Length: 125
Picture 1 (cartoon, rainbow, N blue to C red):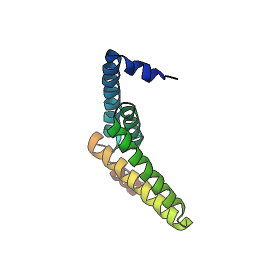
Picture 2 (spheres, one colour):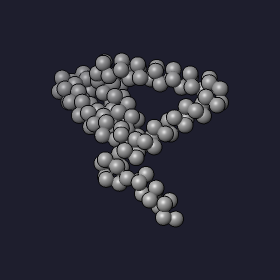
Picture 3 (cartoon, rainbow, N blue to C red):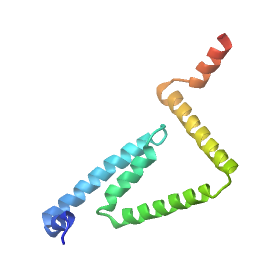
């Protein structure tokens, strides 16, 4: 049974159009993801989703996506086998990292220094 992608690839024009469309869509999603990486949110998720789009047409993207999947699964397995205090420590380090990235992003991209405002508020109340 032929899939829709097989039917598109069977036509030379369809093959080129598919490759161009996948290239543009993947690049757009990866670019948005890269822009969002320093901000709290789905930056890395979008980069991986863009790689998934590219993997439809490009073998190198499929290999890179498999490499990423294996390492994320390995990290997850390793982290879940640690004792509960270690998992809390790992989670705390992750939360501190995200908080610092959010603070620096707000401070240097929008000029809002949340820490200075919080210290000023505490000093006056």
